[in-house]
Image (cartoon, rainbow, N blue to C red):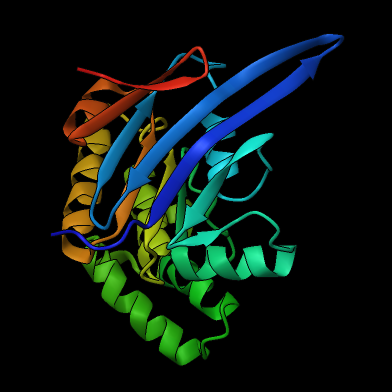
Length: 228
């Protein structure tokens, strides 16, 4: 039996104003993810996928509803508490890797740990274990400019997972890759989800990636609906 949810979303709603017109983007979204779950969220541009990710990460506040991460409600948390929660429980992967160009692959992976207060040597040791998991030990001393697109995204995945988060939020993680590298990155995420128990929620336009994740929902008309 799976353990307690890492993500609970109940009645999440969000609207924006365009001039004098109110546009409802999310309408009562409900969602539960447990350890090791992998979920793809699809939808056309402007359907609210990025808005949903921002709400789940506490980067924006909903008009109604609640988000809980590992049982803790985001409502009412100040920025310091939100930052601590993100650092301890959330990992992030983006379409563009956002690696720091002045640091090596290993240092980029270790960065969340050092930001969280771990000594540099300990953080680098944990990062070395993670870089091995993503198959890049031979590239750990290289800077991002010397890495291929697929390698950079592997480093980004390792960075997202190095602090052993309960949940990874991924925004078009293969959107900047060719078909081969997209498949490699996709397989890597699935493998690591199974090995680590980290839940993955992936926003994507890639139907092949979405189908492979096992569970798929679509944002349509503000509703997060199942996809057969």
